[in-house]
Amino acid sequence: MTVSTHQKYVFFDFDGTLVDTLGLAMSFGKEVGPDFNLKEISVEEFRKHSMREALKLMGLPIYRLPEFVIRIKKYLNFHIASVQLFEGTTELLKSLKDKGLHLVVLSSNSKENIEYVLQKNGVLNCFDEIISDSSILGKHKVLSRALKQLCIHAEQVVYVGDEVRDIEACQKVGVAIVAVDWGWDHKQRLEKAAYGGIAGSPQRLEAMILYR
Image (cartoon, rainbow, N blue to C red; front, side, top):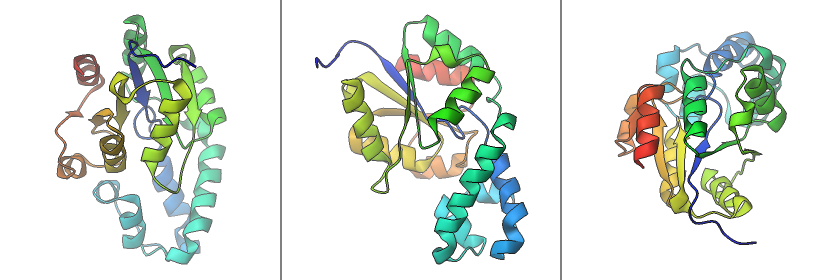
């Protein structure tokens, strides 16, 4: 298969970038807190730490992490109908599509959940591809597989994410990234990752994507 070298792609993370699922995750934490003997922390405090650090701060025993992950995925799946796009995201996606960019969702969330939310919000047709993938070896492996699947080069892609691990993955693969400050990781964490390309609004995000 021939590798395309001219088209521009925008890879969007899903949770925390396109849609707000952090509130649901925090609600889950409160609901199962007694089962896991968790200490309650604020959303702002949670966002200042990596997921692993936050769960450790809440007192989750490492041996119960697999059980916790399985249960939170079931919880999010059950409440998927309540998930909404961040304000201004619909207009952003339609504008980028109208400008001829190829839009892709790259997420560990299920393809069914992603398609459901995007369809419900009227933006499913903005995306050329929806790739559901995860790896215990790191997000850079997921990103590398997506490039191979689409037969494109790293230089053609701008990745949009909300976590430090997104920045680290893109740096490893050589993909440009724009981080958003409304997601799971606090702006302070993104800045500490030695990265300055942070968008504070969908309008600013569009400008930064087009500039890259």
